[in-house]
Structures are given as structure tokens and as C-alpha cells.
Length: 193
Image 1 (spheres, helix red, strand yellow):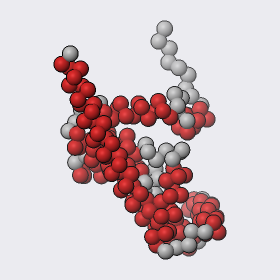
Image 2 (cartoon, rainbow, N blue to C red; image 1 turned 90 degrees about the horizontal axis):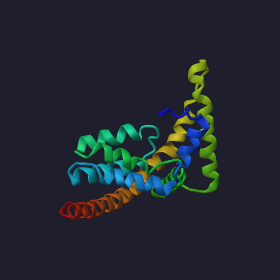
Image 3 (tube, rainbow, N blue to C red; image 1 turned 90 degrees about the vertical axis):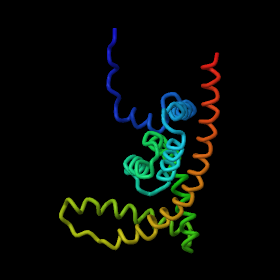
Image 4 (cartoon, rainbow, N blue to C red; image 1 turned 30 degrees about the horizontal axis):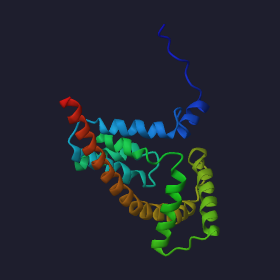
């Protein structure tokens, strides 16, 4: 009667990360409802959303889910709200966020953003990934590739990402404040009936 479904394959899990089973509209609606139902001071929720959105625009991939709650805790924001907001950077939105952040960061730094440079960054990234295995093989690692990757990719991404992230976080915090206010009014009206 209550049989557990069989475990999903890795391919199915990856497919569901890229495109959720019920679609993106349903996933966004689900996260919005989860966010509105958080029982906490609205200011803490708004701070958590701000921090989570800001962290989603940083190049610290894999650490967003650790960094967002840590920063939210440090400034008194809601941890769950910060985690929900970090899902803004997902496999669908990541290429757009990365391209916009790197382009803006290079423009601010005065670097050339030609396609040739972006191809060099891509080649440097592949080289660094290949050298990653040299840590385990005992081969000598050419550190200049890491320096080039840091200068051409990480620094512009961080600068552009922080500026874009601040704008996006401000918009997300404003939308959250409006949604929470209207949700609170709706909840009060339902209790009065």
C-alpha cells in the first residue's frame, strides 16, 4: 500500500535539476509559497532574501548554500529565506548571470571583452581543470594558469557579480516585502471570516 518509489537514476536527477518535474512556473510558485509561510519577523526574512540573492551572483560555486546562511546569520537574517533565494542561480540562469557579471566586471576594470579573450578564458579554464588532476598524480602544476584564470575570470566575475547582485537583491527584497505585506493582509482577512 505505502511502497516507496524506486530510487531515481543519476540522469533523472540531473534532468530534474535542469527542468523540474512540474515545470519552472510550479517550482517558482512553490518557493514563493515556502518563503511567504516562514514564521519570522518580516525584516529578518527580507534580509535573508537580500543576502541569498546577493550570494547567488558571486563566483563561489558550490559554496552558495554555505555562504548565504552564514552571512544571513551574521547580519540577523532568516537562514531559510537566504537558502531559498540562492536558488536564483541555477543551471538555467547561471550562464546568463555569469556572462553579464563577467562582461560588467571587465568593463569596469577596463579590460577588452572581445570574443578572443573569452575563448582564452575558456581554454585557460580547460587547462586548469586538466591540471587539477596533477595534484593527485604528483606531476608539476603550472601555477601561472591559475593566476591567468583568476585575473581574467574570477576578479571580473566578483566585481560585476557584486554590482548586479546588489541590484537584483534590492529588487528581490522589495518584491518580498510587498508580497509579505499582501500575504499578511490576506491572512488577517481569512482569520476574520
